[in-house]
Image (cartoon, rainbow, N blue to C red; front, side):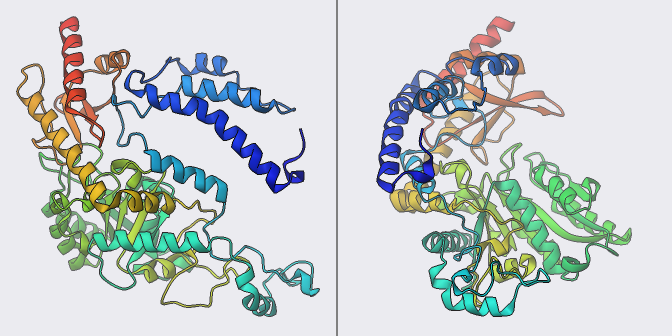
Length: 507
């Protein structure tokens, strides 16, 4: 086989065409079979390892080897296009999502900056590398690069797409400033963690340089808050013990008076509270915390208010259900994951705010070898300056293409349909003596919780259903079935019948 670098562009295009046709011959049947097949064959990890036989070769096996592993991956993977896939807070993508992933693979560029990572100065004959003898970046090189930066762009269109898409999402949340916007990060956990870093560095700017010395920082989240809040506290060096858990009510919403008391108590004990995580569609019960009341507490104590809308934030696209987010415009930052409720391909998570300048100021560094902006503090184009990373995939393109194709109205229809199905499911369960409904009716978000056992959940796979289960302090384990835009009432009816069948068998 010839080296990829030695192939002409025409040859590369022909090879891509050939391999796309090969992949298509297997991918399309996989999607078409989703109504009948959830997973072709489930094997435990050790057995699956043997079956895959993934011995990475010294000499390439070409198309034959590629096709062999492609067929095995499809055979032993869960088909998320199946209507019975109701396990996690996401499902399959859609046709536009597949196209967007192909486009991103073809472009294969990095959205850290509109400009490239190395100044194009070597052809001027000044020096071999862009660094001076001391290892620092030379100011004269910067000047040379400024004159030639138009030659260096690596992600011009994708940068603008990310900025415009994030700004549009921010406006939906009620952020009306001309600086409203945000950026994408690899998942909701990364967005939540980044928000905490930005919060600390904004409220206590000296810590960006000197660290946390002198402060005993604490943060607050509800009992049902996502574990990424604790992960973020560990990442920042506070430790998980710095996370104060606030009680929730019967519907899983944060009890705000308890938050107020916890903040005051932490101050009295010599701690420095600075961050509150409010949930918009919690993982446990799909609950929405009372954002207006939480905002009042944050304003009173000068705390950063973050809304984790990874799961439920997408209701912002629905005029009918947007009321669940009342008060979200008072937040300092919001996480939303379109790869969950909206069907955008994994992963696609936005962190948005009313003023992106605060994001940039809190995380940016001087790195002339990478960022060659004009120092315009009014508008941020070097998107990676707002993150703690560098390499960035253009996940915003997937959201932008879906939005262009379906429109806000198309996404609104999806969300409304899913909520109607969830309400139908909850009603059906509440009328059945075999079930104890833990969710309210209608449910606050797209998951419906009811008691069952993990044994029944495991047996449902053979019936074409995959649902999750979680512990409950009173009712023991309960199952959580997640609705999505393609879930039909017929699917719900079949699921209930399958569960009832196993309940009878167990009794």
